[in-house]
Length: 247
Ligand code: NDP
Image 1 (cartoon, rainbow, N blue to C red):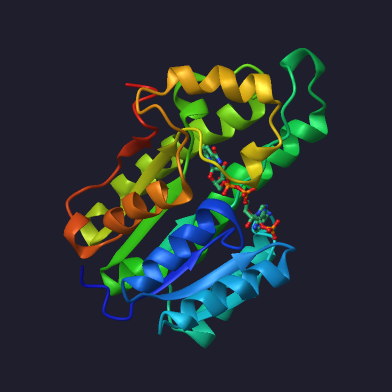
Image 2: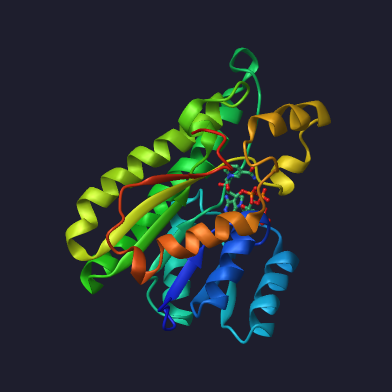
């Protein structure tokens, strides 16, 4: 795939899926900004892993749920690596609770971190992409956003919101060589899911036709394709990468 040193910003890349996406893109020749909110040492581990592969990467701390910090993140990446050509909006959190018990703060935190952050980051880079007549925007949705999930009204609403946001961006930017897509991961083995009770985990497995939980690398290879030059004619799509869970 022809990455030719393009600049990719991956939000929430210090751990889990974002980490795997950052490493996969670097392995394919992208120069990668590894964004994180608080885990500096793990973000630096990702940068070092990329450098060991012979790639170029920088770590960039920013809470992307804050508009000003998202703006300065894009500016910092542009200063250090060049204008962002590939944006992967991956940062996300869960604050699970049944709707009856959900606190407003749990709703607000998840909507701000998982949905508003995508709006802020896309807004920070899209003008440059449109002018350059090239860009790839990819956001991490979730199967919860497709089919709902008990205990995740906040999370599912944010992830469904991402799909509407990204499809609209796709329509606005398609004529300028900019694509915008969503990956909806199924159950992927990361810190986000490791804390789920064993009975919840074992209840999920029989619902996955592939017969196994997903790995971050399963998402990373789909992400690498969707941001590649080869995917130029794919836009406004939500691709479930879930071992068949929602087919
Ligand atoms: P992890 O909890 O393993 O990692 C989350 C990452 O997001 C970390 O790098 C974290 O940074 C970062 N992050 C969180 N909040 C912010 C913020 N405000 N600003 C910047 N970075 C932030 O999550 P996963 O890898 O499992 O999930 C990645 C994405 O995939 C999320 O959007 C998630 O909703 C989605 N997803 C995951 C699924 C799964 O089964 N794991 C299923 C469906 C979707 P730090 O380390 O500094 O805290």
